[in-house]
Image 1 (cartoon, each protein chain N blue to C red):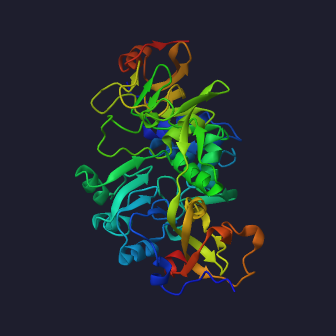
Image 2: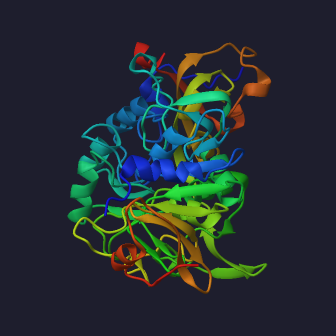
Image 3: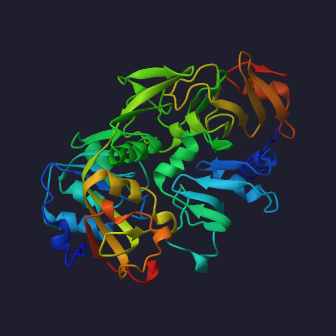
Length: 226
Length: 213
């Protein structure tokens, strides 16, 4: 019997290695797998490259992971937001490497990784400093820049429902980066609000099919998120 | 010289958005534009984080913690609205499906260049978000911004001095002093003046030559 549901955070985090590239879902706090990030802090892996839209806020979650010196590099589109104090300190001190990526390019680079597409061309960033040093080609009279797929060793995603085959659904705008990250990593770990019996999720409404998910951990985020 | 305040600038942009357009609004004054599009004129708002048919802010007791806009503020979904993931959301943008994007800016140049994400090549921590995708992908890019900086510096310029977001993308600029079209091969053309503003005043506040037609 296939059963991707794990019973403990330790089981969810088992085997994450030092130096891993970790894709972390969410857009700000919404759709962010807060509990899994705490689990990763406990688990101890270091020298990580983290891919997330934002660079953490306050001194918890991703910000805490960075403050503990466990993140070597962050790949994100919008590191400078209200409360991103830890990132800004580390960046000023030269203690963290930053790769800034346009948001759509970031999403597409992961979608490409999940789809087996090694690189693609996009008009985004052409004529800007973010295109410096990248291959450019013209198609139908317009210039495009080549971007490489962005693959994760691990993806931490946040979903609404999950079943033992790893099928996931998301709640409203909590979907955001989670499905593309789930498909782009070798080991995708989902924290879900609800575990459903196999067959209970409406097949037409499964957002991430279980083929992209390896572990599911139920986390009750409490009544505010119910 | 009176000109528009921020709300009037947003309302002025809203006047020019026709029914049926898919529109993405940036953070700041652009977000306020939604308040001035009457509900019966069906304009479908897109948000980068995976929403089409975004509605206004909810009453404080009706906030859904899962439902936010690109500025991470609580919003609602209109009947007919839908949710999707980030790659689909940016496929809408990059694939040329969005009719209009309205952004704020540091500078707009006579050739349509926009600079709105970093203030120097060695910015302490630049944050680009979705601006370059929107600039390159939306069918039209309009800018709404104050005509000058707080200390009177030019934001309407011949050539941008800050790092570009997208070259040659802006087709119209709404400011507190008026509305300018950006015409290829010509530059800024004054389309409309704010109440109490003269051509000479808007020209004096601009770092590029303005045309009258």
